[in-house]
Image (cartoon, rainbow, N blue to C red; front, side, top):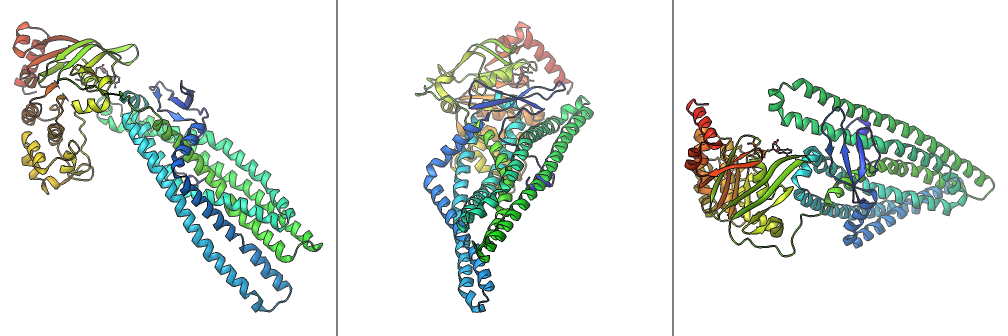
Length: 630
Ligand SMILES: Nc1ncnc2c1ncn2[C@@H]1O[C@H](COP(=O)(O)OP(=O)(O)OP(=O)(O)O)[C@@H](O)[C@H]1O
């Protein structure tokens, strides 16, 4: 219904919960939330989308958000009512001009009316401006609060849940849904409020002129109501379908582009292109159905307008003929009815935007309503920097365990290397110890306290996880470093960079440490990014550090330099290092070897080499490949 849709652009959703073709919806244990599973068909993985709030819960959430700004809402509403009421003086004033002309009065008889019309225009302009600005302020404040809550909760979502939903789901909510709601708050909702007020007050004004004019005007209502219901009945499921198809299309593109190396390696280009084309085509078809729906809607609406206007004109004719109304009054009534066209059209058109925004809102509220990460009433304090893992089991998918009964203890200050073949479970163990994943069974204790006793805040202060996926935030290099320690002095930043041998290249950047890095700024190499992560680790200064493949990306000379940097960054901390380069493992205090989700060996480099077990075999294979320069 929007221009956007009429142009065949992005699809919009609705807040109802139909069961469109590509999705089956089920209500989970919490009746206030709906969890949707995408059953994409064709044997593709089933995605459990993030929860969506019900319409009732969405309304309640809006109420909660608006409540603290009641006064602002009330003032905005009152000013808008005043502005609309003042505007309704125009039609009777014009009617008066008609009466004066019919009475053959001299031209100067209308001077007062012209002055009054000008005054009405000025007052209406000013009050409408004031009212809209009050409503906009209310909308923006509420939107900002909702966005904050959404981001807060989105960051606290368990990683497994986001992975199950597919990052596309969260991305669409953060981008498309937020901008949909922002657009509605800025444009559609104030306009919708204005239109509804204009409709109600104009109908009241028609009744004041003569109740029969009101009755005549109301003849259009059945057609309009039927049109609106006809539209909503079709639009609600259609836009829900469009929304899901767009999310699926986005997820497909993310999967294809994000996994392009794998796609190429396994020669899956054709299959992925076909899937992407299939998903795009279903979006196109759904959008075209939307355009047809909009055209049908407008033709029905025009019929309603014709019936109403004809009825008002005929009523005016009879009333003027039998002397119950003046020509001016009949003119005012016709003008009133004509002035209803714009607000009625806008209201009906904007209902579509409002429905789209409501659907987006339900998806944001669904995430915003997620319980915050459990915070113990009195978080425990780790008594030292030890790590104790007991009976740890984990399965990402039920029935497919990837860790089996893992027991591991790291003494305070101990540096332990975790090695093993790909898929052995090293990353999973590292992430569970860092509190990123919650284990299926067993406990992790930091300094003698279980992670749930420490709570997320203390866990974050106690343990830092560095992975290959270090993100360089857009901003200056100093800003990026200060994320780890907001109050750090320039001296501290330099010394942290120096400890990981990064000060040299950092100072050589075009503007030194003030160089803008990250998205749109200076691109850092992967080795520089890893060094930045290590410098952040030094600044954050947690007693426990977990490093997963921190040096895996760098070339071999760079890797050795990074190994040294890692050693200095973890100096004085308890460190668990997932080591792919066995030279890094060789220098650790202890090596733990994993295989098939179990710890199979543990000891120093020399001890494990002597036992001629799994590690010795890995070492031989690795030394061989190194000697051959592989
Ligand atoms: N998010 C996930 N969802 C489902 N299965 C997963 C997920 N992450 C890892 N796995 C599976 O868990 C097992 C252990 O993986 P993990 O990444 O922990 O091993 P790893 O030893 O770190 O391997 P690598 O050295 O290749 O990173 C593998 O079978 C892997 O396929």
